[in-house]
Length: 145
Image (cartoon, rainbow, N blue to C red; front, side, top):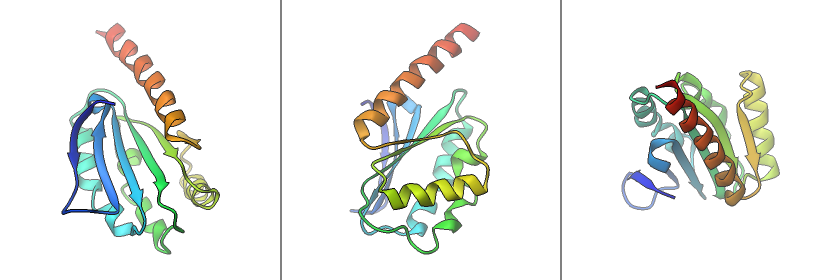
């Protein structure tokens, strides 16, 4: 996978934010222990990046290394979520989420009536889907020119 840039605040941080696939995907990688504040800390950079794009930007939420219950204040993270507020947002893709993490995400997304979401058990399945969608979007952008 092509990496455009990597942003890691400090040394080892439980929530890593990256821009991947030549700018078509923002990726949040969760590693135990993580907090809601560490997720929200990346929102401004994500929103600023998306505002410069003229194509859909997908979000991959990689929970393979999370192995923890979501923090009790996780519902606070739904305010100003970049993929929810940006006009260039593609789908929200979850990879490796536990059954409980998936249930929490489904609940939050149902409350806010967000339907552009997919869940995959493995990162390989998630990337296969993302690359297919990106190829379709690139074709649509090319045809529109």
